Length: 147
Image (cartoon, rainbow, N blue to C red; front, side, top):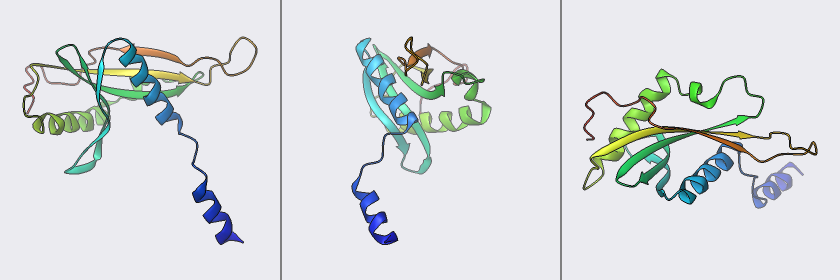
């Protein structure tokens, strides 16, 4: 019986995680603002632990975007969840991404998009997710030059 249940679970797709929903919503929102989404969930081929949620182009600027899903009642905003350790990993991943480009951009930036999921709507049901976009979050050294 357990084997049958395990096989049946494999046939039914799992619902998207809150992180995946938040990333999709962030990508849609940025694209609606005229940004080009160049990569989603990009992983460094040399170290698969290094991941960039979104890589976008905002005009001529290459933007690395970290998406943080939060409940509407979270005590710590997504901006503060990107701590020094996380920034170190993101910087390594960004450098690896830039090394793989044939023509690195002149300007790069790091943004954080916080998506508050599960906010209560006016009728008590689930409300619309709320997005907060923090642009140009300090990540890169002062005179950073891509690769």
